[in-house]
Length: 265
Image (cartoon, rainbow, N blue to C red; front, side, top):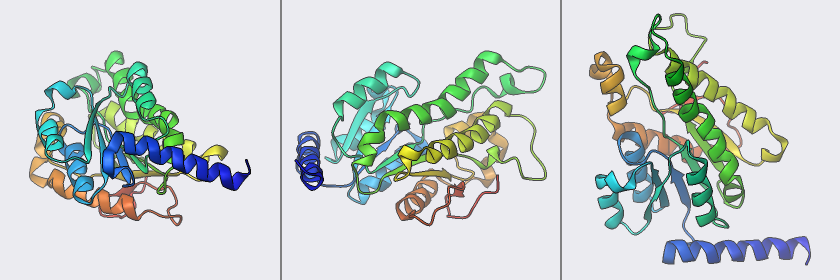
């Protein structure tokens, strides 16, 4: 079998697997979104669904994700899957289920801030540091590594991670508090740039997009004093959707804001 035949054969197999999972929607573009049960993640599910994409909406606890489950039940292109992003077992099971299925875009949205009091100077908690780094930095790398062939088989070939301006080291005045969260976002920016530098990943677009100051449960718990300046999760998600779907070969890997502007980091 020559190379051209191999390509056709792989495409046919991918269509068969996709059709089995997505029914008549197997030919649609597909996005996988982590942390989909609330906030920006849930609004990203809504945004992609409204544009006709198949949406693999992952959450750590599907049984308690009532709003997400109800949305999926009323939209046949939304598929709720269990995924604790720090669980190797969960990653393995999900990758087996979607083996051979092309995934156009992965959005690493799942993230945590962590107890603010335990990342204040004078009260630094090592266990919390490792937890924040595992969820915000290591998990996006492992997800990319796990599903890289699914993305490689797609048309869009994009892996996007949600970053934050809190990870910028170039701004004049860095606010105090939230040390672990900010460090994790700085590390995430470099982690994604490193993945993009791997020769085997040359055809994959690795992106970094920040949602801006958004009214989420995370902000309410960690930085309630900023809520009056925040915008809605819907606005963030719509902006992220537009930025992500329009990224092309001209993108240089820089962190971008949800409005498309660059974040100096």
